[in-house]
Length: 604
Image (cartoon, rainbow, N blue to C red; front, top):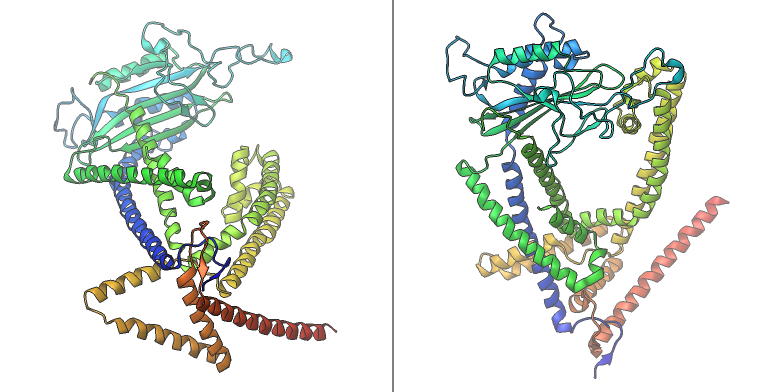
């Protein structure tokens, strides 16, 4: 006569429980295998988009156009430009010499220079370079009335509202007339402004002498004015030896404060994809990736439909959704900058996908006991960490604002509020120029530095470590009391391996029992060395056997609403197991009382 029981209410039929666990374990293992294939293909695709030659091509081109000095002045190059005369010296010197290579080192002609220019004889200049200027109008700012007798003109910083679009100078060629911007091209983010795509534009000639005469004419007619705010020099190279395009942009900003700030961009990208046999292998991987992506999309859709709002309660589901969202003429100037921009954007997205794809590995290795403890530690202390983070960033921003207001006008690390924030993190990591603030402020500088180190490093960071250590110790105590991940990946792989050996008759069934018995004997021997008596060891072994038998029969990871009976024998086993647990709890209670009495005696 079966006894009705609410102890196992919500479970599945007892003869299906073990099968359900086996199916779930096998499904998880298959999911891990499929995801491993997906990750390997994703890595192949990401590494197929990059090339070690990209770095060397960028390095060679930057050395040529940035480090080459002006003739007659070894200390002057593009990086050191600080005035308009220096800019024209660069245009007529290192830029011209770098763009036009007419002959081999022995003065022999290796190619027809009329059709193309080959930098370092290996890199073809596609089309011709382009020079573009953006200006602002006069009277875009207001001069104080008492100082207007000294200066009546006023040119503000560059904005789209202040931009000058009127013709100026000779008003005959494109360099003197404003060209409307192309809406498809990205804006440029410089040091002191964000710049549009239009402006006063001219292209260089195929002839070196004609280009030099062009520069002289522009210089004589004051092409650069007080309203000039930025000049872009754009050109593109192609190296057939390594199948790479190098898109180069040299930028000279003219801030409202005067002087010139230079910057540059060198993008080496692979725009011609399918050329070699390896490229066709990459194409095969791309097709496979799309198939796997479709499978994952269908799988996540089924999960969302099955679990509905409960689906969004797990962090791994959010990570999977994030991964799914992220997958997605010769005499004229050849504008490859837009292509390079989107190619770099694609590579960056792919890098982010790779990062989160590797992070998702924790979903599977968390079934390991150690990794499960680490993930449990982070989940248990998340509230404490959030509270700590609020306090940490309040103090960090307070010091950042103090540093910006006090040192911002003198020290480069605090020149902007953003730089000041990053300077705080650099101080924490030990990368900081203390001499700079000490030199400017002999008293306030050291006080700022010492107090920051005390509060952030000695106090707050140690509080953070204390939160992690305390929570980890609590999680370890929970696991020592029997809390374990319901599915251990290592044990599942080992079990599958043993089953294969048995089917191939390479391992006898008795070996598994011998290994289990040997493991139990080792555990018993370790318990004896730690001082446990034989009664305690036997009692622990008996409870372990009961626990394993009961878990094998009744454990289920899913909750259902069906009603399940328990037989008389099963009820007896449960009753005896509960009695043993009561004995253990009573024994632990006695030990705790004994310890408390000793502590009380010591306190008096």
